[in-house]
Length: 200
Length: 189
Image (cartoon, rainbow over all chains, first blue to last red; front, side):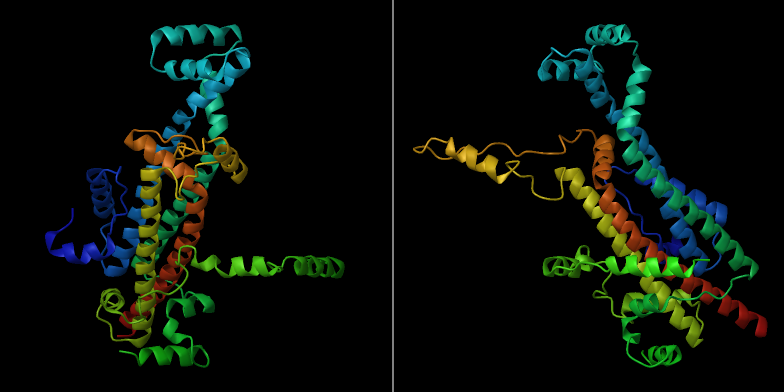
């Protein structure tokens, strides 16, 4: 649980990236659970944990979106089936049947019969919806994999930090220069760093 | 290990992939970094108050110049991350609101617009049609609408994630250096 005396400090690092449809209460629950579990001891750990919370929240959100996206493709999937099964029907009729299938019992029974005659059922609609959304799901899965790797790395870093096992890192010089543009002018690395230190 | 022949072939092929060749291509590529403005340094001066404030907390009251140096790098990277995430939320919310990041066109092509105007009566004001949304209508409900907004933005988000990964890498490396130095100082003292 967050201590009120730390609010100002925490606000600096635990800035929630919430969408208007996200639940602040649920986010707080996730954040508090992670903080309670990991109990960051110093500011470095707090920053690492803040990143972990950010990643976990995005993971939860994307997992939820995956289910929503597949569900959203059920109607186009049914439309595709009906287009194949009812070649003489116009697009208005197909749209009507596909839309009402999910809300109207009568239409559901009628469309179900048409599907059954072709050896199809609701699972076929789900499978087709999955097929139609596979490209988007793949992109989301790739992001979920990235977030998973990031979480593992953060946990490893926390462990190393606590055990005093941090190893020297090697900066890519271009990244270092981009990080601190004031360092771009100067001689070798040492000179650049010395130049920076002299700044207030 | 690659053979001499393979190395020569790689070099030859690499020469074919050296970026845009035409002036139009070069002009376009020149502005790549400005699409979101996330790879350029903005108003966050190296020692701005926000950076210094965060850096002093990261450095844990240490006066060691190396620690302070890396603390500033970590602080800047952390603030960059906040900026990138703000942009990300902003474009998702915009897509959620409007269903598109660009204005939705009224016609599919210029030819379609000309045909439409040719068929309008000359003695009446032009009655413009409803905009054509190539992506179809957005769902009305909250969660479905946000999911659809994110789905439509997946390619854009991928680009933003690259900026995010870069800032994270910088922050991670700097924090590691600080962690090591603080540990060494503790051991030596």
